[in-house]
Length: 495
Image 1: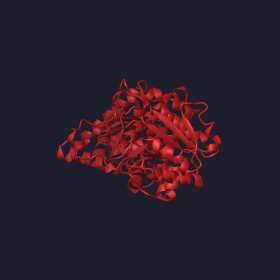
Image 2: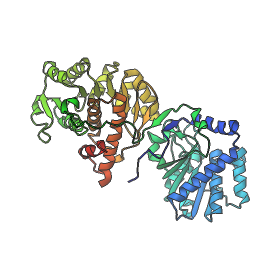
Image 3: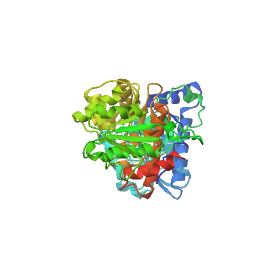
Image 4: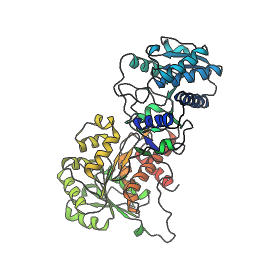
């Protein structure tokens, strides 16, 4: 399985406009010629693809009419000099090339590099295909000739390398602009673009390599990051004292488990216990309270049919996890309202989010953990609109509802009342199955119970949940169950 560790990448992420400003500062402020930066970008990309495919000897490069295409011509020239069988495929009239891109093309032609004005089937059987078609400035859906070329790239059976960003992917949002290249390797320059890491970005970028093109740190320090990438060492639980006891490790109360959905509350409770909460109780329907903990007797299950029965449990708990399997009945609404009125820290998920969407309110005491569909209901949008700009969505959620917002999905985003959103890369497609969100709810609640501040609990919870999913997926992604992730939590929280 590919590694999702972030520790080889910078933590600061930027918008496309910010990176263009960095590029301009390097050229105008520091006097680095634009063509020199282009040479460095091509050199970095060629070195990265040779590391990835050391035995390859045939290379095709698809070059657009802008500076991204100029990078492509540099790569083609370097490959030619290294003895590769090379083809360059310009898209759009060559006379549209200007400035540094035109100079890079001239250098390639002077080296007698082959240029083909059509794309043959399968790119003549090349081993590696370089996507230097479109850069980060894309502001409309790809159409016409460019859309057809992207289709041809995606039909290519060999390795695909994207220069700076896969063509058709929005550098700011991670959304696909009509169609986008599926790359195996993306080499990004100057500053990391935030769209590479969330939404459709992870599925289209493959392995991400960063190169600052030997520009000094001041180029990036002039820009305030638009978001940050979580590292494996960010945030941690302190070691337990030798004299610790369960009363010091918090008491999580899970509220949920409507008839037919007891498993959701059970999984959230078990996850809270596995992450280290001292005590875990479950307030659920009386009909199955006696059965819910048969396989996990450490959980204390209580049949609750009224707020009067819930009150003693609320008083004993230090953290509430509300929503797993809760439903939207009058019973659910009554318990949800009582949980909010308690003033205790809450993790709000699943059906509790749907109830919140019906009667919006704000609180500084909760963490909301919606998937895109739930986020859409909370913001009065469609799920597609949420995915079109996940950064805007998580920011809007936090501002409208307060507390901490966690927008789940590929490249989960965490936003708090201060600072910029954080992005997590851990997790895998095998986690696209029922119960994974219930596990995350329990994990975050269990970390809150152990006295982590809310934003830290959210970030650490998302990270450990994803790492546990990756560990559990070592036996294969397809067929991965939420219970498998729960089993891996203990290993990951103790690393």
